[in-house]
Length: 181
Length: 193
Image (cartoon, rainbow over all chains, first blue to last red; front, side, top):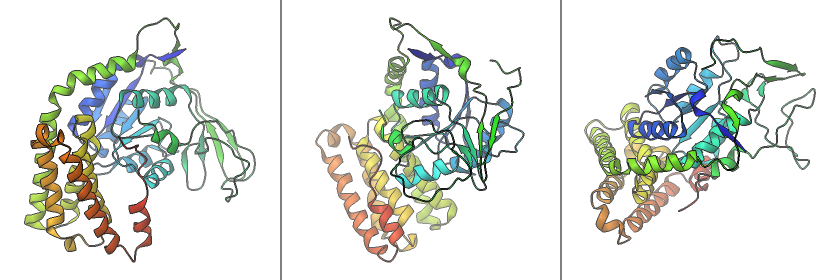
C-alpha cells in the first residue's frame, strides 16, 4: 500500500474565489501539505509558478485576467525556461464533456468537477504523483499523453505517425471526471 | 524540499511527426510504502477538517449571493458588456460550483441555469429581464430562507422550474445554431444527487 508524503510536495492553488481557496488550503493541509501558495488570477499564478516552482498546480477554469485554460497553455510551453511538465489539476464548476476535451487539449493532467470532495482531490493528486504520463510534442500539442488506453476497435484518423508510442493503461479523463466522490 | 539538485534531462523518443518525452519523475520522493495496519487516513482527516469549516458556509454563501446581486445590479445600470457579463457569469459559476459543498444544492442548480443563459443566449440584451431577475431572486431566496424552503422541497422545485423555463428559451433562440443546441442538451458529467 502506498501513501503520499504531502509535506514533500509544493502546491500552487489558483482560484479567484477566496472561499474555494480556503477549502483547498484546508484539504491540502489536512492531507499533510505544508507549502501551499495561492493566486487569485491567472497572471499572478503564472508569476508564482515561475517563482516558487510548485510540484503540482491546482487551477480553477473561470478566472479574471486570463483563465485556467490559458494558464495551462502558458505553462505548457516546451521551450520555456521554467518547468513545462508540472501536473495541472483543473478544478472547475464546468461539467460538460466538451470542456474536458478543451482542458485535455490545453495540456491539463487531471480534471475534477465541482462539487469538490476530499476523496476526489486526493485521488487526482495520487494519480499525478504515482502514475505520471509521458509528454507528447506534436506540431500543435504539447502536454501529457492524451491516450490513456488502446483499443483495436478504434477507426478514427491516426494523429501520430512513425512508431508506436508508449501507452499507459488509465481511465480516460472523462471517466475519471465522472467520479467526483 | 529537494529543490537544490537539478533534475535529469527528459528522455526523448523522436518519431516521424511527434516526440514522446519522458521527464524524470521528480515527485517519486513523495511516495512511500505503508503497512496496511497504518491507521492514518488522510481523506478522513480532510473530511473532518471540512466539517469543522462548515460553520462558516452559510456566511460564505450569503457573500456569494451579495456578489451575484452586485454583478446583476451593474448590468441593470450599464447593460451587458464583456466586463459586466464576465462578472455575472463568474459569480453564478462560483455558486454553481460551491453551493453543494456549502449545503445549498438547489441554489447551485439555479446558478447553473443562469450560467447556461449567459453562455448560450445569442443576444444577451434580448433575454427577457424577468428571466435573469427570477434566477437572481431564486438563488437569494434559497439561501436566505434555507431552513424553511429547503426542508419543504420548495427549493428543488423552484430551481427545476427555472431550469425548464431557461432550457425552453435557449432551445427556441438557438434553433438555428445546432452547435449550441447540442451543448445545451449534452448531459453533465457530474452525477445527479
